[in-house]
Image (cartoon, rainbow, N blue to C red):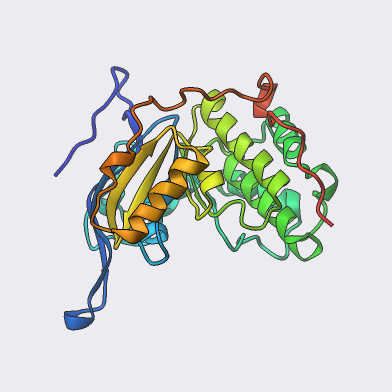
Length: 292
């Protein structure tokens, strides 16, 4: 069994970690390894994008890391907790208290309005509301005049922003996001990614994002590339051009390992926030435009 390293204060230095993690479906000749012996760390306060061709295991890896799906073998840690050893009740509490989720399909409760959906994790955990943080979060996501609306009364982009607010309201250790900009236009998508980036830089949060978009991936500190369920390479300090080049190489030669694309530049080098950070982690860009 592998034990995660800890800081001098006793806190695990990695927000999330996989050790020899595998997930297989089927049996015999029909057995498919969606995740194949993956070992990877997600240090606290970092933003990681996970990319690869369709069917490469991106979402399955995320689900196993977050405890939404069980691994066939290996270990998955949130902080110093090996979630593969937890029972259902323990896993539910850990996800509620320490993980934020942004799903591609939103997963909002249709009978609750936007405010109630956002505050649901706090209600379930029995935690009080930090009104200043709530106000800053809502303002930066452009939801101030949508709080009383139910999901059916919101556009797809607005629903995604509610889902983002719900994921961030508890200040979780890790936010797992599956295509978080998929329902947003380019301007709102850029503002949302800048907000996530600021939560990492100023709030010390950890974000793991699955995306197909090289531009979205360029907001991350690093990009992990997957092929056939296995790690195929890593980019540090990514740009849209380097991500696109790596993906093209990955598609052309899945066994290449992409060693030539590993950037020698340290994460966060050259990153400059558009404006000074605002109190309460307010977005560093213009608040998101309202959808119609």
